[in-house]
Length: 407
Ligand code: NI
Image (cartoon, rainbow, N blue to C red):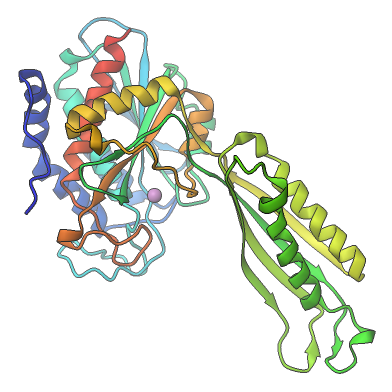
């Protein structure tokens, strides 16, 4: 077995690390308990009950039922008085996937699975709350720990912000992490600027005129129109987006027709759009509809078009990203373990928090192929190396102490 939790490098390092190491069995226990009872977005009832029960046990002040199932815990340090507030965000929801792992802590909820590691995020946030509550003398200021529902959709961050979780006391900065099987255990993906992409969706229905497959001149063939549209949409990234910027336009679903000799009167398509640069907000919806409208007009078809801006891009603040990078480096003890080139076109509603206050979202490497723990996120065999759990807690704790020390 690879030794993945590095040795303390100094007395100060060992103070935090030894305390966190001592709760490693609990972190694993909590994570496995949560893994066995996965719940979909806004249905995290058992999960929230479990979190609330633990917080209560440890005497941590918290509010439940925010944006249905969300929780906010508040811990105030006693090192010296400080008005500053740092928030830590964890998501709690699972996915509609039937787990295929054969492990003792396998999902007990049919068709629902923690296949993205949010069980681990919740356990790390709990571990952080526990540690901070026990070590209030080691930090100044207030820490708000946000347990958020429904990251996988329809999104719990926005309703939590609307419910006022960043106010009273007002949050100065926010940090959060995602366990990440695209990175090996012992690495941290952190960078300033864009980390994850904006997520937008479109639904389009082409309204043609059906008829006999052998008499096309009496019809408006929705299949031909849809085919032209799919092809033309490819030119948006190729010809309209600045080549220095990255973007994706994917048509993920296309449905039309029933059989060989019938011309389909309607065709439906669904697609997703991703980009990093916030300057493109509003651009894709306009350009896509322009292409659809132009092609439909030239073929005599009509269309219905619906566009949804789901999540904005995840943009990290340079100062807070540097705080996380420097503290993560202490935890993994090797600069090689910091991976700044960790951007992904995946999306996250952490972005809504980052639009409100400066902050940093980062990836905590959790893959370990030697233990067969390297399946991708959202795979029915997804699992991660639990050695990452105390590393996550330690990074959060160090960031808290450092954030308030800097005044
Ligand atoms: Ni996730």
